[in-house]
Amino acid sequence: MPRSGKELIDAFKTLGARDPESWAHSEENEGIPQLLRLLFLRNAWEDIVWDDDSAWVDRTIESSGKDPDAPYAGLGAILRTCREKGVADSDLTHMARCLQAQVLFSICYLLDGPVTIPAGIGEISWGLFQTDEDDVPFGPRVGGLHESVLETDPSGKEMRRQ
Image: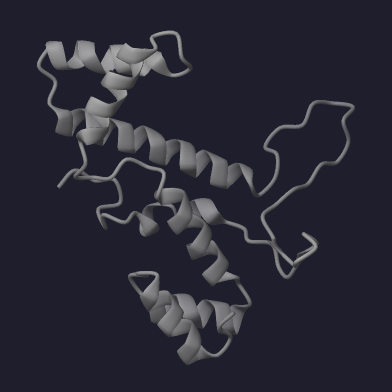
C-alpha cells in the first residue's frame, strides 16, 4: 500500500481521482483512509450503468423476454413499455444511473452504522475496514463514503445531465 505523499498522489492519479493531491494530503496528514475510500467507490461505480451505454436497455428487455418469471424480469417489461411510449434510451439510462447512484449513496451511508435500532436490541455498530489475510479488520474505519459518491462518478458529471 502506498504510504508516502508521492506514492499516494501517484496511486490517486492512477485511480482517476479529480484532485489526487488533496486526497493524498488528507490520507497522509489527517489519517483518513482515502485510498481505501476511493478503491471501494470506484469498484461500486463499476456496477452502475455507464453514462453513454444504452445497450443495457436491449440486454434487459431481451433477458426478460427469455424468462419473464426470473427475478428482475419486470424491469425488462417496463423498459419495453417505455420504449413503446417513445421514451429515449438516453432518458432511461439517466434515470437508471440516478436511481442506482441514490442506492449507492444510501448503502454507503448505512455502512457508517445503523440509522435506526429497534428498542431492546442494544448497541449495534458496523463499518467498512481493511482486513488482513485472515480477514481480521485493522486500521481506521473507512467512513463517510456517502460524502464521496458523487465526486467519484466516473463520468465527472456528479449525476447532472449535461
